Image (cartoon, rainbow, N blue to C red; front, side, top):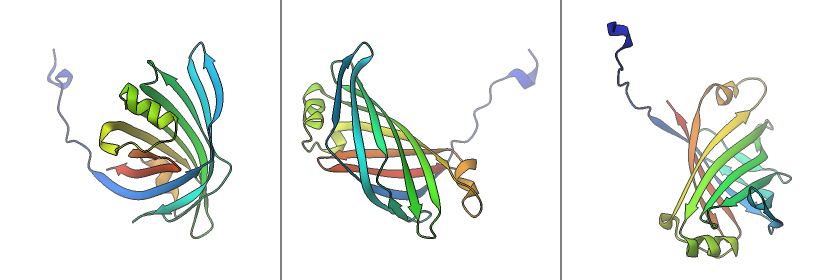
Length: 162
């Protein structure tokens, strides 16, 4: 086997903190139990974006489309919404996530009750679409994040992989 075919461990990517979001939501629209799992739609009503690279607001009109599986312990989240930055630029966000919690904590989350963040695995992969400079870098980078569900909203922290 040629040397070029030998696996090489590359340096781990660094993380650059981009922003934190406090997203407000309306009560869940329960679709019900489908063959794929429990379907819910969580309307996004607004929010705030603050951080070293992005600042603005979450506009109303988005939603988080949820699929709850494995006896309610796993939630596959698919949120789509728009952020308006301080300069008026609008950014489309498509954020997919995985949230895993114990059966008891999952039931508490579904009822809108508080659950300590340390007891829930909530990780996301936001993607951004925006036109023009100076925000082009949003579409030319990979991002990951962490989340926490609160009774009246969701808190997210986004990081750019460097």
